[in-house]
Amino acid sequence: MSKTQELIAIEEKYGANNYHPLDVVISKAEGVWVYDVEDNRYLDCLAAYSSVNQGHCNPHILKAFKEQAEKVTITSRAFRNDQLPALYKKLHDMTGFDMSLPMNSGAEAVETAIKAARRWGYRNKGIAKDKAEIIVASDNFHGRTTTIVGFSTDAQYKKEFGPFTPGFVVSEYGNIESVKSLINENTCCIMIEPIQGEAGIIIPPDGYLKQLRELCDQHNILLAFDEIQSGLGRSGKMFAHQYEDVVPDMVIIGKALSGGFYPVSAVLSNKEVLGVFGPGDHGSTFGGNPLGAAVATAALEVIENENLIQKSFDNGNYFMEKLKSIKSSKIKEVRGKGLWIGLELTEPARKYCEDLMGLGVLCKETHDYVIRIAPPLIITKEEIDWAFDRIKEVVEKYA
Ligand SMILES: *Cc1c(COP(=O)(O)O)cnc(C)c1O
Image (cartoon, rainbow, N blue to C red; front, side):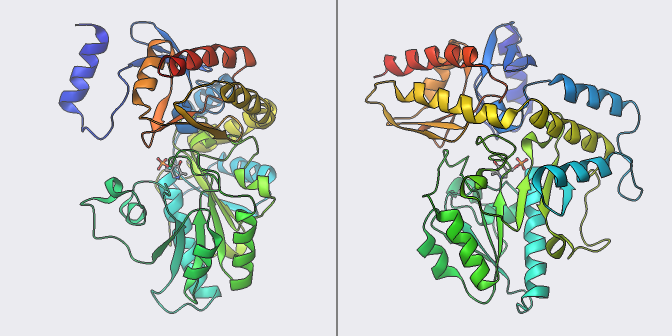
């Protein structure tokens, strides 16, 4: 048995089977490259669902991680620590939001936004007790907690996990009339992804985000954007919603906030919204810990210092134009923003991803028909060319 087969066998035997990974066992990584246990090299075109926008084991973040790990890793929020203020300040300076609330996983930050929106609705809008409603979108992905999967429209995400939390209504993504029809006096928040990642890089019609902002202003509703995957440069802007020049009331971030070192997420908002939380109302043992804060501050510095947002924009266009030049009856559409590209096929994408793995490019299909191409934002044009040649080869093989 090869080392790969041996490790897979142990995993299959002792691990819960809640993922269907490609059979590559990664043991080290650097920048855009990952290496398996047989020392084969692959170009990572998934970047851990955009957690490593800064590249694997980014040296600047690694340095902060190591240095902080030797000082103090966790204090709990029962005490203060000397790293969290710098993260708060950095988030404010880079995003313009008044304040933020740190958590760990993305789903926890989404839960935090839900709590904040509901309480804001009771206090600032006078919504009757336990009546607050949040409007979400079809094909949303906001995480895996029981509350969050309760308003998913993906049957698999919710099957046999009920009963679910009430207070969510689902509009059709991209359809402003659908949102309008769901607004009532109990609506406290509209929460959507400005570009849907897990759904397959779905970009809403131009003007949709602006129209959402107008509806929220008219009806005194909070606008929350889940930018856990789309944010921090992935789309070619700091935030995907900046393509429409709207300012939401809340932005939820995670994933690349730590450059992949450690789960760090946050809700960015203003005093009126995050001010609804008082001591003891909400919290997390690990949220805002000094190791996470040091790592996140360094991860944000890398985005800024290495000009990753502009690189994502420029190289994303470069990559997308190349992909659009492939002639194949199997390509339905090439779409995306920045280095976040969906290659939609007319048939299931799994075999393409398996073939690409054989050629040294790691991609993962999303929702069966879409190959998501989202390499670390540090990727160079030469590396894009290298990946492109292989993608072209595989797509043309099935053309
Ligand atoms: C990944 C993701 C989440 C959930 O984040 P976790 O860290 O896996 O809990 C939420 N929203 C969006 C848009 C995501 O892409």
